[in-house]
View 1: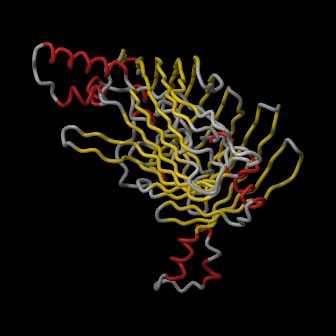
View 2: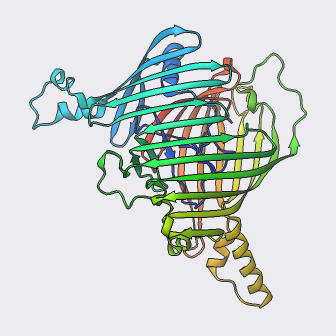
View 3: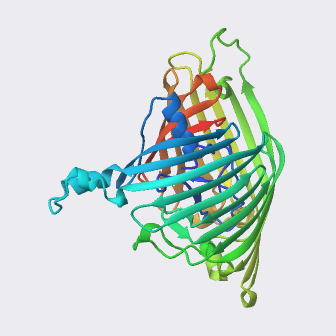
Length: 449
């Protein structure tokens, strides 16, 4: 569920997904595009800190989440050490399995006996140490009663991120989850800015044979990028923002907005253009020319089967428009926000299609649908509407355009209720549901629009 968090980033970056599949509540997404651009992080509290905030300040002793068919409850116990050291024990109880065990006619267990079943529980240990005001070292350890999987993670975070996860949880575009026995990455990224140049540089290593999460036998073939191997990825981009219109009217005096980032009505546009290159060595680099064509990749491509290595390079671009009405200060009808984004993940594929389209027009030939489809961007839409006071409703969705079947439909939609925490300037509690993943979760977000 990365879309609600990263509306302005596009699908170019390998951003953490939120998921209730694990007690840590995150997974790495896999892109179908040949050139994923790094594991960019953002402003995000760890799951134990989120649960701790809910318990302390929002009168929520148990935080629910849902991942079909499991409904779970989470609670955290913090261990005070010092102001710059946060340590917590996070517990999770599977309510769905408990109710099923008690109601099972073939089971003679009482509810008290059922509570002793270790498969109902998961536990996590998290320790975050603030090295400097801008640097954090995080170490986490998760254990699950229903299997022998124990997830470990360690990374220091700044604009340089170093992460080691064993096993690492990944999610592909079909909403299938995969465990990689060991995954390590180093990501160096420029600090985010509203406009100007930026860069990403990533080293990524996978080890061991990937397998479906929790042994799901219906999962398709393993995605090539999850196989053992080493890869280097780099990307350079330039972003520009333009204000088409921005309100200069007076705001309500002595009335604090529910979110400082949503105070100004405006219409703005933004654009990103860049280039990227990926070099892979190992099993994850084995991709035949047929596989490349099936993915629609037409950029620079070199493949050396003898040494199991591949070099890919391409360009990308994105255009976005955002419109907002209201200042989010009044109780009703004071926030309506619309955002749409057009992504061109492969510049070479777009250029190839545009060239063929131009040739068809010059030769007075009717262009085929495949040529037109090649120049069509990926479309993303987000709509947010205030319900009452700090509550707003939001829908984020991709839009899939199929010219062959003359079909336009929503793709991977996410529905959410947001509660703005007014006293914190720009923070919110978000309850979201994804029909495609069949997942529900409650999260905290800070400084995100």
